[in-house]
Image (cartoon, rainbow, N blue to C red; front, side, top):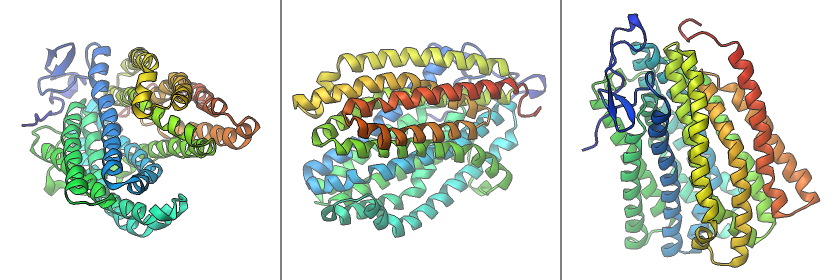
Length: 481
């Protein structure tokens, strides 16, 4: 039986945002009596770790489950089917980053409302988010049936696999309602300090996904359609379980089906944060597609090496993303409670704990990079080339953590457009300039990999200045403002 994690215990808010809260110790982290991390009181560092680690593990497992999909179809359905599934990676990556960004709007708004004790606002936001996710998902599912083939052609997928690639994309896009619903539900859980429940559900649905892959591909002799159907079914399972948990919850963050309706002012608040955050995620994907085109130009050895090293980056990037989202939720709740000083303290602690985890995990990846790369490919040339990417990306992730945390910090205050513009101008601009102007002057893999630390260091500096300017004028809580 999956444990239902209810939200913050309600109390007499008239005497302050912390009134009425019962705190208990569970391990190293303070939690309220209903089982969630208490983000408004007590030490911060232990709660950050308890909050961020399940998020990081969620990101890692998602990548591993995706890799399992490709492995199953490649081993039992052939290279053409594997190429068809893999060719949709850029499009799916764009969509996933867009959805995660949009759901951050829900995360931020619910966090702020919880901190301020606005129970009615929480109720409106939760129900509006569920409605938006389903309506948006249905729209994308219908649209996807018309644009799947043109998108495949736009990606220059080889003709021999184009039909299978279009079929996979059509079926995958049919699952948009439940995929989008899962992302918004996860954001609701994160906003109340619960990252464990989505992780548990992800593990369950991931195991089901792998089992269905084997059933459809090996048992029923399907190809890309079997893998796509397995993905949709597993997402339906995860979204359905999270919705059930929200429906049976007795807390203020719960879903009542008869209350599902679209509140336009609430929708505006969600989109004001979510759309820029989604665009920022898409910008990273677009810039990486640009870099991938240059990698393809360098030949099959570099392509194989870069692909293998990319799987290792999952471990470090998941940490960056997790601490960025942790900072968003901490700041959102404490800003809603009017505690600006604790927001600033949370930023400092996030940097310290984030860099500590990054150095440990990144250091282990650097030390064991050679045997880890050998798991994907035993060619010595591929391994030596892959080591180049691993080293440059570790340097880049030092700056990337600053970008993620500062972007999350600003979003916690409801400031989402500024970091999105910084990413759009710096990440996209610098990487496009690097690939199309500087790289042709010296077309080597090392020269290409320099684009990551170069673009991220400049972006980090600009976002740091932007944060300082924004925070200089921010002294009030949302209610006071």
